[in-house]
Length: 296
Ligand code: SF4
Ligand code: SF4
Image (cartoon, rainbow, N blue to C red; front, side, top):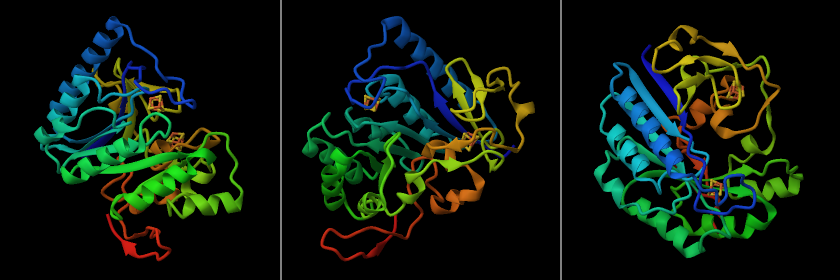
């Protein structure tokens, strides 16, 4: 094996935000749960450090990881390992960002989500500007709920043109063509998110070069298919790695369908598959109506 991409999700399930669309809003972990999450993450980080093949990691915690010191430390440590190609995390950007100064910025990346209603606009925009000033690779995104549209438009206008702003179709929300056009004006790649992708029987890289790992080291092909391939720490997963078709009818989450081969998204997001940064050039709508081509 040359390279393994890992989506890691430990037991952490708490968040400092209170998003109405999220089951983890304002949940608290007990001190024991936090200790378990920390121990699991440290074990995982040590495993990655010990590998001789290339590894890329996307942390996809249920809650917010960067408010916890052990996630900041794991990202920093992994970013310095020569065999780690990319280490990224999904975050609401509520935490301080000064820790990024100690990371290797050629490998670190953040997938940041703006949650209007949870954070003052100027504060979130300030965090994005700080990331840009610190040269931290990042994408920024928003859930495509109707009430988020003006916020997303404002953010697109205020972010530097080279910062990609993605829009996730809201779960269970059907978009008319007119609505989809409004979101596409903000995220030119919104079409990929608008509808769930019919995936059954199609080749998907998960289970072969991409796996999902939980805090116990249980390995599955992705976060959505429950079948267990083995365990990370006893190496039993390795014998199960092979290319195989998707068993589910649809895949509707970017962290899954980006690996669905017929979509060709490894080309669209070349160099930024995990942190959702397109290779560019892609068309970013200009706030004044022009549509210059720009690249990441
Ligand atoms: S920031 Fe993310 S994890 Fe936290 S409540 Fe909102 S959607 Fe859930
Ligand atoms: S297409 Fe989606 S659900 Fe199917 S195996 Fe790939 S990531 Fe999992």
